[in-house]
Length: 130
Image (tube, rainbow, N blue to C red):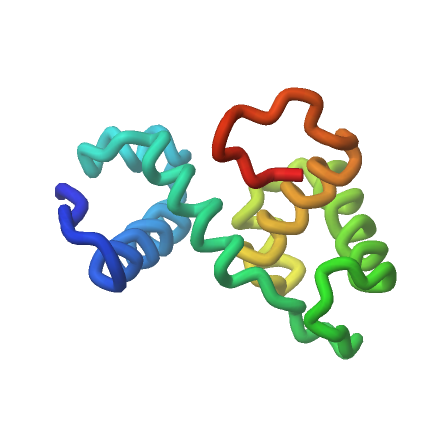
C-alpha cells in the first residue's frame, strides 16, 4: 500500500490509520513496514509528528493546564517514563496497560530526553529545536 501523494488532511488521515494498524498488528514497526511496503523512517517520522500534534494531558484524575512547561505535568510524565524504563514492555503494551495515550507518552518521552540533553550545540539551518 502506498501513501497518498497529496499534502494535507488526506495524508495525515492515511498516516493516522497506518500508525493505528501498525500498533494493532503486534508486529515491530520494521516488520509492519516490510509487510505493507512502507519505508520505516516515514512511519517513524509521521508517528512523531502526529504525537506532537496530539500531545495533550491524559485523563488520570489530575487536572493539568495546557502549558507544556508546567512543573507538575513534567514531574508526572517523568514518573511515567521512569516506570516504563523498568517495565520491560513495548511502548504500546505499556500505554495500554496504564491506559494512557501512546501519542502523549511518546511525545513526553522525547521531550524529557530533549530537556535532559541540554541546549543544542549545533543547530543546522532551519532547525527549530531548542
